[in-house]
Length: 368
Ligand code: KG4
Ligand code: ZN
Image 1 (spheres, rainbow, N blue to C red):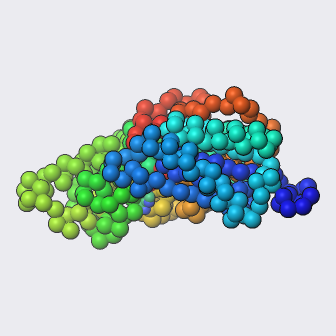
Image 2 (cartoon, helix red, strand yellow):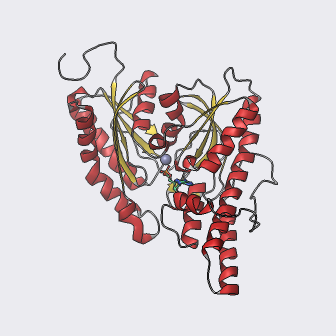
Image 3 (cartoon, rainbow, N blue to C red):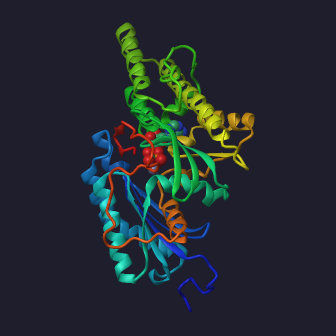
């Protein structure tokens, strides 16, 4: 065969991945553990004036941009569309209009090219990324922390996950974003709060450590954000506004509280995971909040103390992307999973079928 990028029959299949479950439109080409191209087009500008993701605007933008992202990915990889061996698409959980846009385009491509279609759980994409980047052996522990998700998972296989706990309200990224808004800092809030926190005193304001007094690995962040709001209102009432120092101290206190809670809950999740006596104990972290050095550093130290190998994928593969969907799709195909034109888009799709539903569903849709 010539010019189809699949000259060697022993090569793993070339998977086209599509992602459109939230506010990033993405396409990627992945072969085995090699990312040949990964294109992500964000929508922050489209939603900026609304204070959150507007599902209808997101869905339309995905529908308009998915084919362009696919074209760019093919260009970047230097491959023709005919070289694609299978199409993997996020089929949930997420904002339903966006997921539908992706699933419809994937079905059209699959039918036109006559190539297999596989629907991927977005959370499985995040959860399997440490295998793409570091070849982490099963079972490993994963903390997924982003603007839309927060959960501890034991990842046992491409279709085998156990959830040890998760947020019952906001996701940590959501809390960072709301805290930034309360303090008049720009969006996305995480990097802005982290930058302010660098010069602040984490001890000046005593913020709560939600759910630490309760056993288990569930988390809660909405009370923390409310505590920041109260502290701000107190300062405004007392002195008419916030000084730079006030803002930095509040950011430092907030970040320290989130890091404390995440590290303590991780300690508990590690204990449950180690109870199973894994042969090569390992932990990874995924999602945009994994970029936070206080949080990542705290968890890395904890892993060193408890004898776990720690990996953190590069940020571009931690945040929403289609390479993780293509990789997970490849893993599912290898296990014989195929979908047909009846593949449906799912707003909620828990990875662990046996875990009780999580209550929260924040600005970025269902957390499943
Ligand atoms: O994974 P992601 O790109 O998108 C989803 O939410 O699915 O994560 C984005 C979130 C935002 O809420 C952003 O504020 C947060 O990750 N984030 C951070 C940092 N960088 C991004 N949070 C804390 N510290 C950071 N450095
Ligand atoms: Zn995500």
